[in-house]
Image (tube, rainbow, N blue to C red):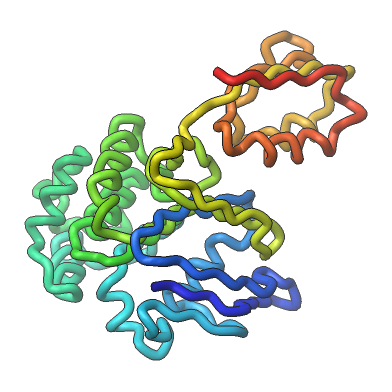
Length: 284
């Protein structure tokens, strides 16, 4: 269904994508993971036809740049950063629904489930909404259409805990009728939804792991790290992981990580071998 063939992208002489080749089949649900700057968002924008690039991309045999209307009409997309649209919310919903021939009330229904009162904001400009309201509306538009492909770039950003849970419940309802690409820093958030994990680093695919639907990715591992001394660089490296110091001197760190993330986590910690006095991992 989706093919990336030797895709490369350079910005100001910086190689952001470096020869990406991937085939994503119908019904696959992909977690696209990696740190900031790994190339995840750039790859997604190439898929959506927003960038020129070397190599080729196709969705159902169509080039997303030369057949943008046909391709985007079958994609539900939630961007990492909301666009600065000045269009009123009601007009945006009507326009989005007309592009793919869907009933605007489907978008309204999903918004209500997410806790967004559309009736109160229909005349307000999209750009003037709060971050959480923008995210809920973009999710409602993406999931309110009959999309064959759902592309989500850090979709849970700006969502409150309750809306985050409802959002992942909504995605779970689409497991049997959509191919998904979900970009996230946290595999543990999306592990229950996906059957393939693709990790990117420095513009390359460094891990591509298909997981059978009857194998769980939801297991967690408890972690304990003792440091010889504290270094701010170590704390910065663990930013975004559910690992935190438990003492005033910040020498003992504890927390949990998603089971499939353990090798990536150990790779990060290994950069600070000289600091680590002891490290233990145990299945929860």
